[in-house]
Length: 267
Ligand code: ZN
Ligand code: ZN
Ligand code: FE
Ligand code: FE
Image (tube, rainbow, N blue to C red; front, side, top):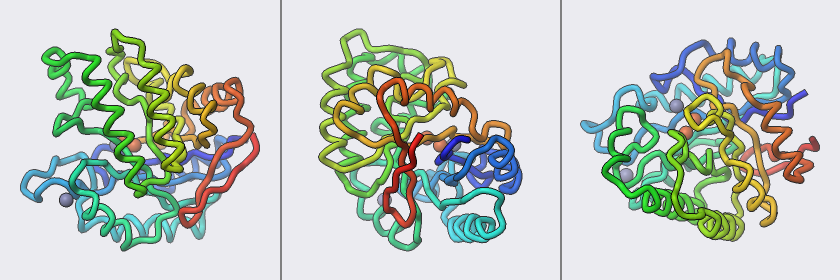
């Protein structure tokens, strides 16, 4: 049995497919006890005319997302939690806090997908790496991630080393940056997501990689698990490898969330 898959999308975001019951049936078939839907929050930090189509649900879809997950939860073959994946963009914290306060999410997952307006994990914006210093990109990414954690708006920090997605690695030793990030996460009281989507991208590695995960463990940070499925077939994808990775690192439990309270399940 797999304890939890806390990162499932739905077709409301415009780049995922499959019906919600198909995600739930897949979870039940794969022996997953609990799932957390974690679809992309509307792009609250962009003016409506600048919104990116096919990136996230529209603001008018958010109440429907919440009620769809809540109503499915009552008749699902597995336990279902209501989460949301919210982008962090500095300067828009109050706006985000206001949206989050309008719903009773079980958990809020914070993501950094934009570095000062650059969608660095978007294949369409890959060319920008050639114009940048990779070490500076890593420093800025982790600085934003730390800033996100310190807002107190997020329970879970998503795919913590997403910046490695295209397997463009820093030339300098990233460990001091990792240590600093772990220290900040600890003081912020956040949980870290062990996200298997990296296995499906050029980096071919779970987020976080073993070196970063070891540092998170050393700082006593809790972990949860997520496949980041955008298709029913990907529910639970890579999770057995993620469980093995966290066990080998020393973890004996994973976190789940209800009403934004953390709980632990033995693994
Ligand atoms: Zn997505
Ligand atoms: Zn805003
Ligand atoms: Fe994400
Ligand atoms: Fe996601």
